[in-house]
Image (cartoon, rainbow over all chains, first blue to last red; front, side):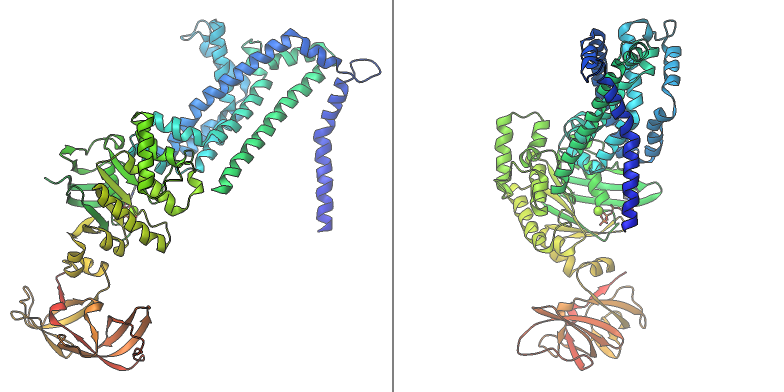
Length: 262
Length: 353
Ligand SMILES: Nc1ncnc2c1ncn2[C@@H]1O[C@H](COP(=O)(O)OP(=O)(O)OP(=O)(O)O)[C@@H](O)[C@H]1O
Ligand SMILES: [Mg+2]
C-alpha cells in the first residue's frame, strides 16, 4: 500500500514536470522582454498588433461557422444511424476517424487539386469560396470529436421510442430533430464545440496552404521573426485551449448533475 | 362497418411469419385487450395499427378511412409505451401540449387543454416539473395525458403498467379504464397479464403464435374457451383424461369413476380418450349439494393464499387444483389425507384440440 502510493506520487511528479516545465519556461521567457525586470511588454506588443486582432477574430468566426456546420451534419447523421442503420454504425464510426489518420496536408492538397480555378467547382478562385473550403476542412478535422461526443450523448436517450412517441403526436422529422433530439444532446454538442474551437484556433496547415489570414499561420510568422512575442502568443493560445477544456468539464459536470437526479 | 377494422393482417420479418391472418373489428368507444404469451405478436399488431411497422398484407381502416399506408404522424392515433417515453427536455405541461403545439394551435387553447388533461389524470399541480422529478406511475399518467391531448381517434397502449409495482398497477388500471369511459375513446390495450385483460376490457382477443385464437367478452373467454390454449392461458385449468363409454349420450369414465356429461361428443369413438377441463373454483372439497360427481384422492399440496386456500389433490395420478375459502374455524386437511372431491357434470369442459 505504502509502496504503491510512493510510486504513484513519483509518477505524478514526473508527469507534472514533463508537462509543466516547458510551460513555466515559456511563461517566464515571455515576461522577460524588458531587460532586468519581469514585464508584460511582449503581451502588450502582441495585443496591440493589428494583425493579431485580425487573424484572431478571423479564426474565431471560422470556428463558430465550423461548429455550426459540424453540428448540422453530425447531429442528424448520428441520430439517423442510431435509429435506422444501427448495423452501419461501425462503418460511420470508421469514416469519422479517418481525419485522425489522414494528415491535413493530404486533405488540403486534395482540396486544391479538386477545387482549383480550372476545376469543375473553382472554389479557390474567390475569397468566399476559399473560406468555405477552409471551413469544410476544419469541419472534417473536428469530425472525430464531434461525432463521438454526439453519439455518446444519444446513447443516454431511448431514441427509437422517443421518435415514435413524437410521430404519434403528429411530429415530422425536422420537428423531432430540432425540438427533441438536439435539445437532449446539446451538452454533448457543446463539449464537441469547445474541442472544435481549440482545433480551429491552433490549426496551421489548412489555413497556410489555402493562404487565409488565420491565427495559426500568424503564430508561425511571429515565431519566425520575433524573440519574446512568440512565447507570449504560445501562452495565450495555451490559455484558450485550457479554458475550452475547463468549459467542457463544467458542461459535462452540469449534465451529470441532471442525470443523477433522474 | 365497425369503427376500427383490421382485416387479414399479416406480418413477416424476413421469412418469419409473426402475425397470421389477424382480423378484428372494434366499435367506437370499445376497450379491447390483446392478451397472449411473450412473442405472440401483440406488439407487432399494435405497431402496425400505429404505423410504426409496415404491413406485409391486409388492411386497416379507421372511421371508414384506409390508413394502411399512412405514415404514423398522419394517423391521429394516441400511443402509450411501457417505458413512458416522456420527452426529458420538456416539462410535464410541455409534454402534454407537444402534439397541439406541433399542430400549430394557439397558445391559449393549448394551455386550456393541458390544464384540462392534467386535471383528468389527477396531477393538476405538476405542470412545471420535469419527467425525472416524477414517479413511474405519475410519468405514465402524464404519457396518457399527452396521448389524449390531441384527441386521437384511437388510443393504443402497449403494456403500460408492466414497469410499475403491483399496487399502483391495480389502481392505475382502474383509472385508465375510467378515463377511457369518460372520453369514450376507442382503445386497444396490449398485455400479457390475464387479470388486467379480464378486469379492464369490453372484449379480449387471446393471441397465440401470431393468430387470434378467440375473441370475446371476458366472461365468455373465461367460461367458454373454445380452444385448449385459451382455456389454459386464461385462468388456471385442470385437465383430465377420460375414456369414452358412449359418445351419443356423453358417458365417459375418469379412472374408475363413470361420469354422465349428458351431451353428445361428436367425433369421439367408444374406448377412445378425450380431454376434459375444470376450473379450480367449481370443485369442492367433500360432498356438496348440486355437485353429484365424486372423485376420491389424496391431498398432495396446500397453498395458503390468505382469503382462499389452493389445494392440489392426486386423483389416480392426475393433480386437480381447487380453491376453498379460508374460514378461521376449519383448518385445512393435512397433506397425505384421503379426501373426496365433488363437482357438477355441467362444469366439465370438453376440449376439442
Ligand atoms: N423488428 C423485428 N425484427 C425481427 N423480428 C421481430 C421484430 N420485432 C418483433 N419480432 C419478432 O416477432 C415476434 C412477435 O413479437 P412481438 O414483439 O409482437 O411480441 P409480443 O407479443 O409483443 O411479446 P411481448 O409480450 O414479449 O412484448 C417475436 O418472435 C419477435 O422475435
Ligand atoms: Mg410486446
